Image (cartoon, rainbow, N blue to C red; front, side):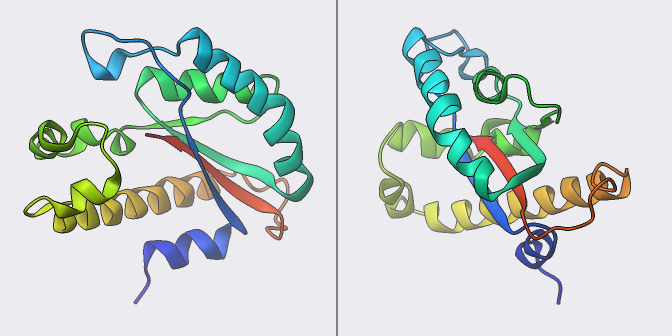
Length: 165
């Protein structure tokens, strides 16, 4: 049986996960922008983290949550790179699963272990993780079919970069 993890890791040597920088408050969570501190965090990542990562990997696909702060984070870190990040709604859990509202109300910004401790929390998070992995594998497959990776078929240094929450 083909799994999303197998699909992703036959195509990429690495999966790199980046969390958005610090944010300001907004009426809707989806609309939160990077704060000044978040901008500084991205600037540091662009000058310290990114050069180290780029010595080992080549980003062939970049995906981010559709929440404003995630796009801002990647644009700030990647600046002049020629690859365009792909916005993916599945990575913003409130859009994908309205049931997340109950867990969010119960746990807020608590550690992930608090979410697992909630009734039904573990099953919900496992289902959400599986949904995200399948969707990422679909997005990446579509990118490959569209020829986005055709210019260099050597995948030994290829990486998928995902910015989320």
